[in-house]
Image 1 (cartoon, rainbow, N blue to C red):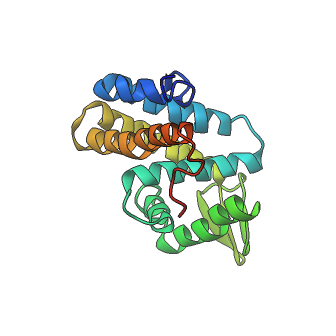
Image 2: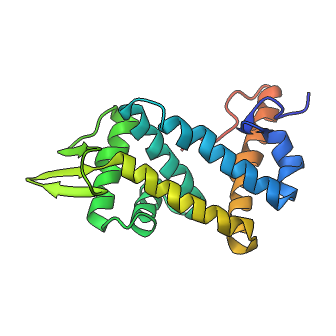
Length: 193
């Protein structure tokens, strides 16, 4: 068996193909990365219920923030992404991380007086003690930023190297090593954090 033939990085590329072929070709890597983000996050987020859309958007932000800020802890990298990429204030980024993202991912709810509201005309709005986030606008802004990022990626250079290295080391190598170790009987090949 060739390890990784049945685990997919994106709909068109399994992790083995990514490792052996796609990482060597900048155009293929850009295509695979775009396909992953659009097919696994953005397109589904536009087709599912509002609650599920918000969970998927939160995980997309987490995925992209990990690429941009790989050495930061999860909360710090997500807040940094929200501040630098989506122009959130530091306070709003903290609230989104702790009360929206963590609430949705860990407790299945938005908490502490925050709301998700697609009716507001801003990405973030504070009114009468209620902090509201417009998840549709957040997803739209992430999509706009991602398309700009893809253009930088296609040009090569530092953006390409950062993305390529992350995909190679943190996604592909980790998956292929784990698959091989599981095949050799180690049921828990990755570290618990």
